[in-house]
Image 1: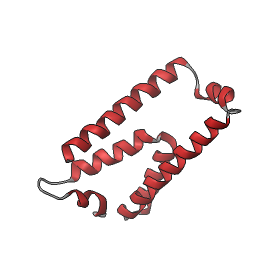
Image 2: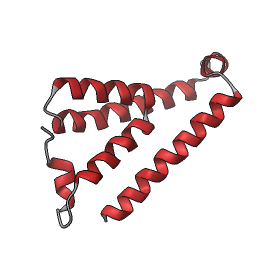
Image 3: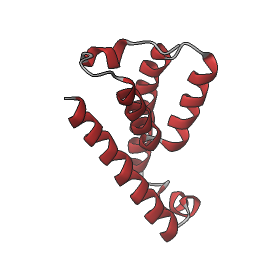
Image 4: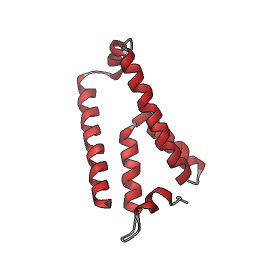
Length: 111
Protein backbone atom coordinates (compact mmCIF):
# COMPACT_ATOMS: atom_id res chain seq x y z
CA UNK A 1 0.00 0.00 0.00
CA UNK A 2 2.77 2.44 0.95
CA UNK A 3 4.68 1.70 -2.25
CA UNK A 4 1.55 2.38 -4.31
CA UNK A 5 0.97 5.69 -2.50
CA UNK A 6 4.57 6.74 -3.12
CA UNK A 7 4.15 5.96 -6.81
CA UNK A 8 0.83 7.84 -7.01
CA UNK A 9 2.11 10.97 -5.29
CA UNK A 10 5.44 10.94 -7.13
CA UNK A 11 3.50 10.73 -10.38
CA UNK A 12 1.25 13.63 -9.34
CA UNK A 13 4.32 15.69 -8.46
CA UNK A 14 6.13 14.94 -11.73
CA UNK A 15 3.07 15.50 -13.93
CA UNK A 16 2.20 18.76 -12.20
CA UNK A 17 5.77 20.04 -12.48
CA UNK A 18 5.88 19.10 -16.16
CA UNK A 19 2.55 20.80 -16.85
CA UNK A 20 3.40 23.96 -14.89
CA UNK A 21 6.78 24.30 -16.61
CA UNK A 22 5.26 23.67 -20.04
CA UNK A 23 2.42 26.13 -19.45
CA UNK A 24 4.81 28.76 -18.06
CA UNK A 25 7.02 28.52 -21.13
CA UNK A 26 3.95 28.88 -23.35
CA UNK A 27 2.07 31.73 -21.63
CA UNK A 28 2.23 33.94 -18.56
CA UNK A 29 -0.28 32.99 -15.86
CA UNK A 30 -1.39 36.64 -15.70
CA UNK A 31 -2.09 36.68 -19.44
CA UNK A 32 -4.02 33.40 -19.20
CA UNK A 33 -6.15 34.56 -16.27
CA UNK A 34 -7.05 37.77 -18.08
CA UNK A 35 -8.55 35.71 -20.91
CA UNK A 36 -10.31 33.02 -18.87
CA UNK A 37 -11.46 35.00 -15.80
CA UNK A 38 -14.87 35.86 -17.34
CA UNK A 39 -15.67 32.13 -17.67
CA UNK A 40 -17.78 30.97 -14.72
CA UNK A 41 -16.54 27.39 -14.97
CA UNK A 42 -13.00 28.65 -14.51
CA UNK A 43 -14.06 30.47 -11.33
CA UNK A 44 -15.92 27.42 -9.99
CA UNK A 45 -12.96 25.14 -10.72
CA UNK A 46 -10.56 27.57 -9.05
CA UNK A 47 -12.69 27.83 -5.90
CA UNK A 48 -13.12 24.05 -5.85
CA UNK A 49 -9.35 23.56 -6.07
CA UNK A 50 -8.65 26.01 -3.26
CA UNK A 51 -11.29 24.41 -1.02
CA UNK A 52 -9.49 21.12 -1.68
CA UNK A 53 -6.16 22.70 -0.70
CA UNK A 54 -7.78 24.05 2.45
CA UNK A 55 -9.24 20.62 3.26
CA UNK A 56 -5.80 19.00 3.04
CA UNK A 57 -4.34 21.84 5.10
CA UNK A 58 -6.74 21.05 7.96
CA UNK A 59 -5.10 17.61 8.16
CA UNK A 60 -1.63 19.18 8.02
CA UNK A 61 -2.57 21.70 10.73
CA UNK A 62 -3.53 18.75 12.94
CA UNK A 63 -0.30 16.87 12.21
CA UNK A 64 2.11 19.77 12.59
CA UNK A 65 2.62 21.02 16.15
CA UNK A 66 4.68 24.14 15.37
CA UNK A 67 2.84 27.21 14.11
CA UNK A 68 5.67 28.21 11.78
CA UNK A 69 5.45 24.83 10.00
CA UNK A 70 1.69 25.19 9.67
CA UNK A 71 2.13 28.64 8.13
CA UNK A 72 4.84 27.48 5.73
CA UNK A 73 2.72 24.56 4.50
CA UNK A 74 -0.38 26.75 4.25
CA UNK A 75 1.50 29.24 2.05
CA UNK A 76 2.99 26.41 -0.03
CA UNK A 77 -0.41 24.81 -0.59
CA UNK A 78 -2.06 28.09 -1.55
CA UNK A 79 0.78 29.13 -3.88
CA UNK A 80 1.84 25.79 -5.34
CA UNK A 81 -1.29 23.65 -4.96
CA UNK A 82 -0.85 19.97 -5.71
CA UNK A 83 2.90 20.34 -6.21
CA UNK A 84 3.21 21.22 -2.51
CA UNK A 85 0.53 18.75 -1.40
CA UNK A 86 2.13 15.81 -3.17
CA UNK A 87 5.52 16.86 -1.76
CA UNK A 88 4.11 16.92 1.76
CA UNK A 89 2.57 13.47 1.39
CA UNK A 90 5.81 12.06 -0.05
CA UNK A 91 7.74 13.51 2.92
CA UNK A 92 5.26 11.94 5.34
CA UNK A 93 5.44 8.59 3.53
CA UNK A 94 9.25 8.70 3.76
CA UNK A 95 8.96 9.03 7.57
CA UNK A 96 7.08 5.74 7.88
CA UNK A 97 9.22 2.93 9.22
CA UNK A 98 9.07 -0.60 7.92
CA UNK A 99 5.99 -2.35 9.28
CA UNK A 100 4.23 0.77 10.59
CA UNK A 101 0.52 0.73 9.78
CA UNK A 102 -1.00 3.13 7.26
CA UNK A 103 -2.99 4.97 9.91
CA UNK A 104 0.31 6.20 11.37
CA UNK A 105 0.65 8.37 8.27
CA UNK A 106 -2.72 9.96 8.96
CA UNK A 107 -2.55 10.36 12.72
CA UNK A 108 1.11 10.75 13.82
CA UNK A 109 1.77 14.31 14.92
CA UNK A 110 5.05 15.91 13.90
CA UNK A 111 7.07 17.50 16.67
